[in-house]
Length: 187
Image 1 (cartoon, rainbow, N blue to C red):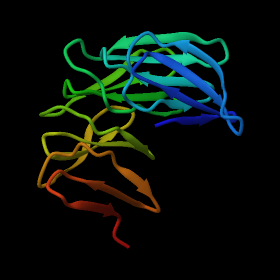
Image 2: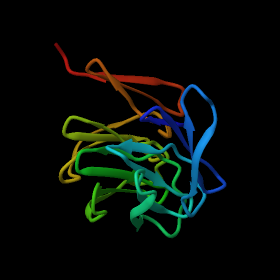
Image 3: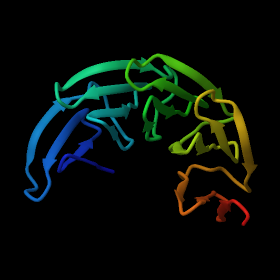
């Protein structure tokens, strides 16, 4: 899925290229190599482009200079299909290696790492001071964004490869058991 930034549509793809398409014209105005295959959607925050590769790397690119600010290896054993989540000082990546890693969004320094019981294809979503994601272990997790400490979890009836959707005080997610779960605060 594409991202939108400064009237440009941004796409990464399995050919390892980032393409910037002028909104309204439909023409590729810029493109450059990101170094490896990408299957997930990019996250864009304050002129920086965050991507996860099928080689197991997490990267941050500066869109103004078209240079890599940092690249970290999240996993050497598994591919990354989950899209990253970024806000302020945090960049959160999840992988099929069972790990969720939070990096400093500017420096790439690892802040914390959390391991689920099975692989993760669910893209993390940041809401307030928490990050939520599902796992193939059948759990939906809620971690404290600053520390990675698990604050909440829910065991569904099947694997959770879908990504959470959050809005209007509710979180909705589907599971491989065919159920759709909705969570929210009681009034």
